[in-house]
Structures are given as structure tokens and as C-alpha cells.
Length: 142
Image (cartoon, rainbow, N blue to C red):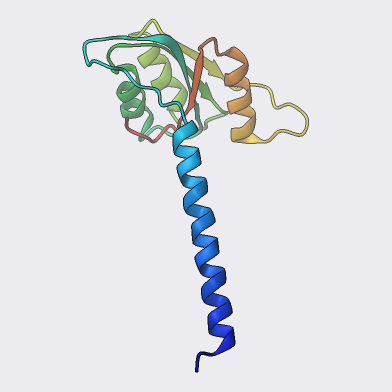
């Protein structure tokens, strides 16, 4: 004889997984993927890449170049030096001298109720002009 608790748990698990699978299928059908049909075709929308950075002197140079060297993309890069105490700001300025599509913001004022990274991201967002926004960290290689 089957234990009633086991039966109830099995039925519940079956229905829970069924709901999860159905929702997954619905979401997959409604997502509009950003897709470039041909590798030789340039994406026409403008992308704003926002990078908050604080004390990232070991990683910021490579991270910025990995973003700025993307091909066939109309993009602006907004880097916010969030009160760094190391050479992060100097490195960002050196990279900005090489690329025309980078905007550097040093030490944005801290709005009441905002803290650190969230404030830097919000400040960068206020300067963005792109149709699409990408937030990334200063230690990520793209």
C-alpha cells in the first residue's frame, strides 16, 4: 500500500514542475532576442555601457579595452570613477585619450539616500544616450 503522504508530495511535485515548465515555455516565446542576422551586418541601435569603478587599478585597463574593442556596435562607454583611492582614475583617463566614445566621470556627488556603487550606476544612467543600456563591472573582460 502506498503511503498517503508520499502520494500527496508526488502529486504536488508533478504539478509544480508542470507549472514551471509551462511558464518557461511562455517566457521563451515572448522574449525578443537581440539578434544580428549576419556577422557582416552592424547593429543599428546605440548601446550605452555603464561601468562603475572603485579601486580597480589591477583590472580596469583590460576591462575597458575588452569593451571598447567590440566591433560592429554603435556604443558609448560611460565610466564612473567612484572615489577611488588608487590609480584607477589615471588609468581611465589614459584609456579615454585613445577612444572617442568614452565618457569619464570622476567622483560623482553622493545623493541623499544613495550609497557607493548604486549612486555611481544611477549617475552613469543619467548621462546615457543609448537605446540599450548595459551595466558591467570594472573587472569583467568581454
